Length: 170
Image 1 (tube, rainbow, N blue to C red):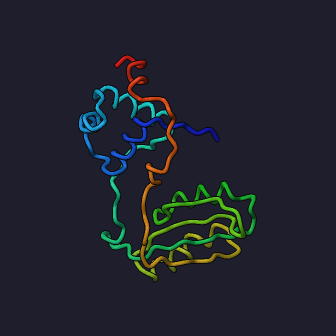
Image 2: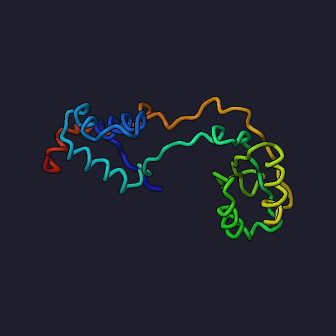
């Protein structure tokens, strides 16, 4: 998979918007010492390249009554049905992540339930009918670390972003 090499302006923009996705572009421009149009173009470029995958508000499931967070390793009776199972998992609103992994599991999911009884119902009524041979459930008591990839650790191209901004017509 190809990756994009960040320059120092990209890195500074990403640090600012990762900290506060609602920061106005003009504020980002002021902090980066470039025009608002340059920031808009750069954000659009990062989005088009797939570096940025949009912005969103983060909903706290616990505040909405979903007190149980569980990670479940799924073993399929027939691994050839993987794609069909993924499509069915997409229809289960409690499932918030699904990963194709190495190791013994055919897939690994994360879900939220209102409580342990609700979790049991989701496993029994929604997951088992998908053709599981078995599953392994891990309940998370609390997320100790929950963050984005640290931008400060990403490598930067040597090119000076001021030169590139002027090359882009700014």
